[in-house]
Amino acid sequence: MTIRTYKMNRVVYGTTCATYLAQRVLKQLVMDDGHNYPLAASAVSSDMYMDDLLTGTADIYSAKQLKEQLIALFRGGGMQLHKWSSNCKELLANSEVSDGDVSLKIPDETKALGLSWRPQNDSFAFSVSANVCESCKITKRSVC
Image (cartoon, rainbow, N blue to C red; front, top):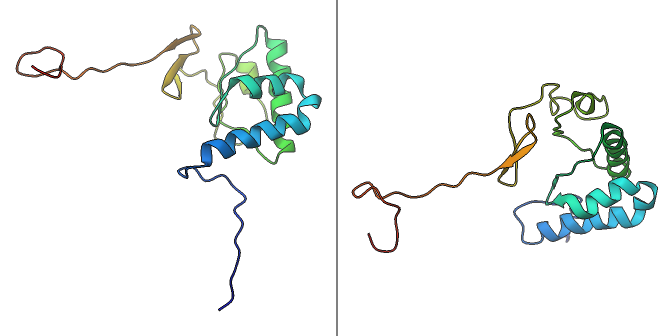
């Protein structure tokens, strides 16, 4: 029997090292090509959470530049960004993103990492649920 070596060339989520590997790949991408894309490098370095980029800009011109730089930076690393969301229709319209992941309609709410963003009024929200004891209708504590 011959010993075969297999090499994974994707980060598989669910493994212990996946979080580290994903973040390390992004850090290396910024180190290698970030000087060509300063806006994207800054956003990836400070606004990336696992595989979600949650960022913004002060005006539409800066947002368009950031989007172009992000697409170029990630393309250079062999990655394609998808599932774009914005409260500006101009930013959603772009042929360089994968089909089916972009809606030209501004959604009522978008979720990432348990945080909800409401683009219509540009606000964030999160839900909290409490367990209620049905017999006494109070919030459960260690003793009811």
